[in-house]
Image (tube, rainbow, N blue to C red; front, side):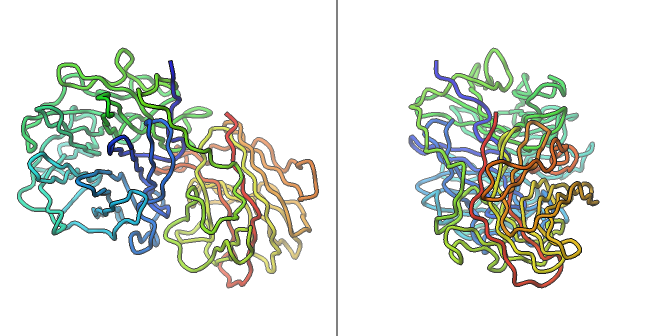
Length: 521
């Protein structure tokens, strides 16, 4: 029996939404303050995924200027109808105001249109449903029109949408307020028509430990909806905090071309106690139907590390190289900026075969667009390294590697100047305060930096390009600073390259010959 391992998209890939088009499957996830936004993936077998690009890859589509950590793009939904792909999502600003919009494309790899913003569309987690009669419906969540009975009490609502005019039409319908009032935070609605029934699948309980997936059905798209007596149909909140897969929720149902059903959802892996460095990841589990209700992972009812694979031809894609040599004309799709990139601060052509990062005044600890390029941490244990050439010309000019959870929780492993001398320094920022963990003289312009994590023990090394052996710099630093449980928010850890002149103007730059990342699990 062929099996697969969860998560199918490891690392910070939350709120999965997936569709089938013929024999092809496409999936998108949330991206928050990172740019480009909304990564989009393609699969033939639901298990092996290759990234096609990003839905929101132009500044005209996505302005993340000044977005604080975990604001920005929340919970996209991907749909397809009559040759057109639709991605609808919520932009949440720093005041937590919600702005819903959609974009379209005929090729999921892009180019996608500029946003169509919707008026009078309150709430988050917007979704589209195309009914058999040609009508299209918008659904999301909102504060109940009659008011909230308890904290985070939300209403799932539905309204017809005219896609030709880009506006909501007709009355708003309150269709469901969840399975249990104690669950709260009713969100993430997806509507399906299966047989004679309309189903609304939602998330409840908040995206923390009490997260859950519930479902209701109706013979009419506008309701009334009947909640399933077996709700929640998937959760891990009853398994305790020691269970290694936690905060399971935000589901999406997909039917294969053979009539089998599967559910994608988010969940987190814990490490070193209840600490979740990787954020929320994408998991996959089978579904069957009994009495016209779904049963998730029948006989078990929980997500598993290893599960029988879908009855689809296994299609593996070429593995991404562990080392990015920066020889292409464009950045690899794994790379993200913090917020919308402003100014020409990076280049693959100024020194061919290198990534050049020009110094910007912005600091990583600021809510800004620093000179930074990062990729997701995707393994609990990993090794990452980079080859850096940098000649700091003034105090405050730095370049190096960053392990990032957000602006206030990260490690900076950087080359700079201290009292006129070149030094290699490791800075831990936690809760807004910084601590210099180690500083050693390093007179050369070129250095290779390495980070190796074994669970929550993060060790740092360096060497020159001529040296065969790595020099231990600091071993077994506490990696929990990179967890959402200390840092808060909804994102996951990143590893990246960074330069800054820390408030001053500078014409300087740093060159990265290569960057490597590999899992050690």
